[in-house]
Length: 237
Image (cartoon, rainbow, N blue to C red):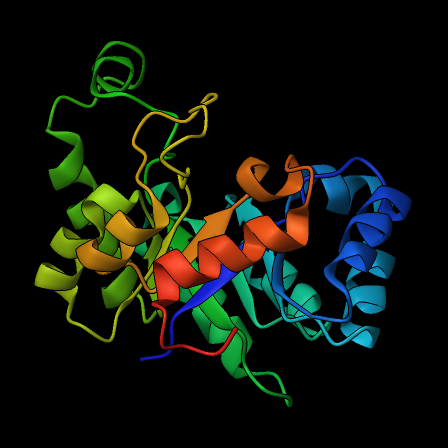
């Protein structure tokens, strides 16, 4: 299964995003567009990045009643993104509605994945604030099984949970893992984190990397370092 590094373009404007990507010397990394950028710049930023030949993970974490999510997924898929997500907390019925909506489209179907538990959430917060008492690893595996049963392609989880997800859902079920930091980086607000090399060993299929690349003095060099650590020295970058 192909593996890749996804650069999280968590910027407040389209202009800042494009200036950042211009620093990659003609390379076209796989990029993530999250809520901040999409709400600020709208579908036009997706169209522009598609025009520039970037592959796109549209990270909006849709979570609503099944009919609303299904209709929204169908609209967003028409933008031509390669990957998009919903929130597993929406239940199997909601996730299945999203998948079925994608199947009605005429073009290529994007990968559809589900968010399990955010990598900023701790066991203590989950128990005290969300009233979920099971171990976080078991919660993630249960949500992953629900996503698989709904027909989704994979989940977003911590790299610490990737191996467990593959164990219960199979090797072909994708694990997309944020919470990636270099060994010499600050953790920030992430809690369940790993380095790119550790994530590779744990079975992550895609890693999503933000501040270690976007905050670097030389983003292209940081991206190259991340690819080498995650993809291995023998892979062309």
